[in-house]
Length: 149
Image: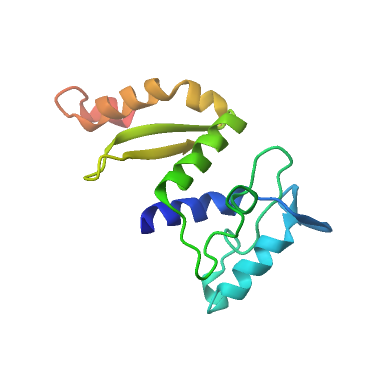
């Protein structure tokens, strides 16, 4: 559960909503509600790198706060695995840059998922990339010279 919550927090870094005029995160408005809540719940500013200190607002991709009803990491709120899966599947339905895959089953028989977040063209060629990595990882197939080229 902790890993799933951490994964959701990472995605929250990139996708959110509820912005205030004038503030931006990259090219998107800043979600000041989520950003303020994260800042308030963080015990030391050293933990707030630029990658997690602010949350952008995206017009068409739902934020974790909008989807769950609270900011990820809110004290006293624990997100169930089913809700985390629902959120990632909603992201995949909302953007060509997100795909979810089932890795297998947990000891409790639940799906374990991974979300791939990348350029849509890269995701379209995912099997090609996986094949290249398989060949690169097997020295019986790929010589050092081939790997270096």
